[in-house]
Length: 307
Image (cartoon, rainbow, N blue to C red; front, top):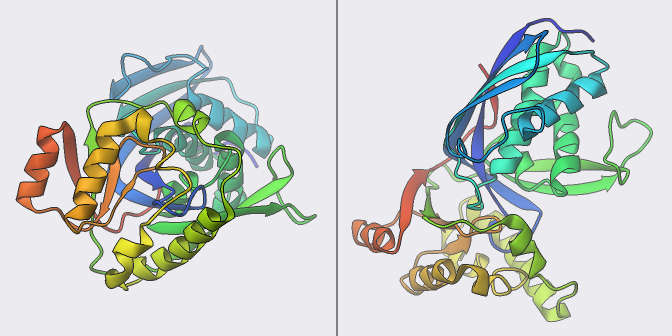
């Protein structure tokens, strides 16, 4: 494999991990996109950022997109110099919208866009590479494949092109979304660090709670495929949302109010954004806006694209 181009341009969507009961193993893409361009250079790496995170993200080789790009090129056995990176970010940081997964996938996809044998950096390879960065595949998978997916990891065998540092391969299977499915993201005006959201989770949970979540995750697949009558029960959850409640109280309170009003609602990823399976009424949108939550409508969204 060798470099075939000196520049590449990709788009990567926002994602929700978990989808409520599918903790670390289900995810969905949304119609909010980061646009990323890279140009190879013999000089030092430079990063330009427009939009979200422009005032806080690094502008050197420590930028996550550059780290992921270099990792993919290393796997491909390709030497490189510096990079000129231009980012137009629309995915808000620290909101449970998969911004870090989008950055990782963007870097990996840029590498695919630069090489002469892109098929060797297949979706399966990129997902495992991304999982090595993220620790779990529920955001990276929908960012790569689009739509909604079920994800898992398994021990790598001798045919695996690449495995994580734990010797695992990441896998994903698409959920056949109902054609009329619509979702609404409610994105608050405050952040929540994923590390904080993770830190409040217990190391073990009651068996009955694990069984509850397993049944609801299975139901959620059916609901997404068309059994809309199951959505409210299917979005019940006991493994992470209650434990995180104190770290994002306004989100949890709004989620419960919406559920009481008949809207199947879950925390998006680690929060504090919310994901509603359905379209909100104008009154509910206005109510959410008054609490500092901006609404974004979506439906089926494709995965990352090389432009």
